[in-house]
Amino acid sequence: MLGTDDSQVRNVLARVLEEDRTALAHDWAGPDAGDGARELRREAAELLEALRRALGGTLPVSRIVEQDPAVRDALTSLSERRARAGAQPSATAMAILALKRTMLGAIERHADDSALRYRAALLVNELLDSAGVLTFEVYSAGRERIIREQHNQMLELSTPVVRLWRHVLAVPLIGTLDSARTQVVMNNLLESIQANEARVAIIDITGVPTVDTAVAHHLLQTVSAVRLMGAECVISGIRPSIAQTITQLGIDLSHIVTRGSLADALATAMQLLGDSGRPGPVTG
Image (cartoon, rainbow, N blue to C red; front, top):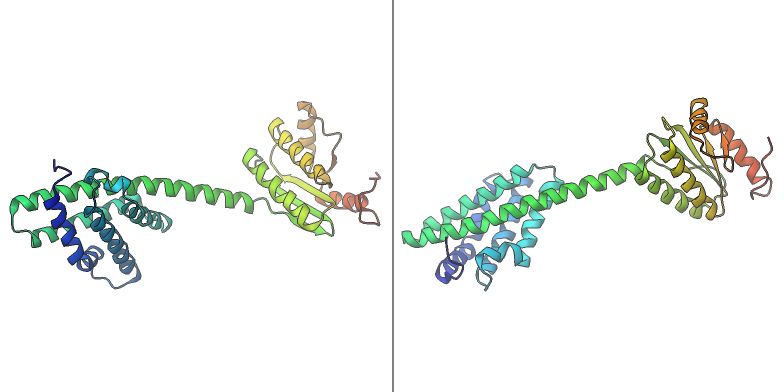
């Protein structure tokens, strides 16, 4: 294995990267003149310049990828851009291998001494193998972050807050209500109550297939939060099957205004608002 203090080899490779950086970047990206090739050449130029500077420094080769900020940033940006573009991790790894082949070809052209070429090849392998591992790790972490962001966006899209009337908001729920979604519902609803000066919030569960103890608990949490904001809460969409389930589970919703349909809930909201636009007593 190449020693980390082989300054002669480091200097030769740094010189190759300085003199041939543009050609190396072009060879790595290929002859295509499209946007994809231009992006590849830009990525290659950034990475090659960062490697050149790092090789001229004092960090051992085995620690350059991990500890040199410029090299790490260039590799991270490359991998994250590819992850956001939907590329597979194997494609990113193959890109690093292609860069390795390009650099090894440049060494062949610039070094006549076979022993020097061999040591330089070992250095390139050590550097870019570490780079390949880092890009895979960054790619995986980036994809996981993108999935989380998309999941959160889907949660927000699936829990819209609708303004039905002056001072009246509604949240039509569809699907299962779990802890994560409850938090999104609560945040969106409370922010909308404040923004619209709402007096009544209707939570419509017509699209919720089943109501168990956990779902009922989440609903109670949301109702409590709404009341702390100074608004009244009405739960609509209580179908006969759900009413039976709630009764069988022994869940007490007697302190909450419930209605069978969204239309009935809106009529109740009008009663709650009264003529003055402030909450009033419910009749019937």
